[in-house]
Image (tube, rainbow, N blue to C red; front, top):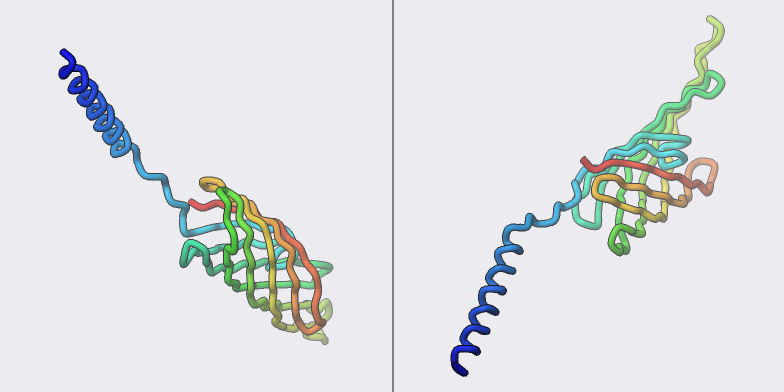
Length: 166
């Protein structure tokens, strides 16, 4: 009877381990975040507001584009920004990131009279931003401070964005 007890205990331990392995095998692996991010921003790379798209090319690196169109007192302003997004630190759902990109802006003032063609101007610049991100399963919220560089020099800027990863 003394020999039977260790054999029974060993059998129970082996059965428990086999049962735990079958539970682990049956559970689906955690879903990886999507590679595509579609977002809207307020005060971001594309100006006063914008719509953007970003594609992850590595777990820590992405390429993106943001654009906007704004009319202020008949002046039409179109802005496009292409950028590189790099995550520099991540802890669970929170991340710190930097973005570096180029901005192209076009301004047009249509003529109110027939004898004048109006005015238009196109210019370029750069953007460097540092920010914080909170990424859930599908929803991403970002806030960042930026420095814009262009013909007029350097200017500080800030923005927030909310997006989805389908």
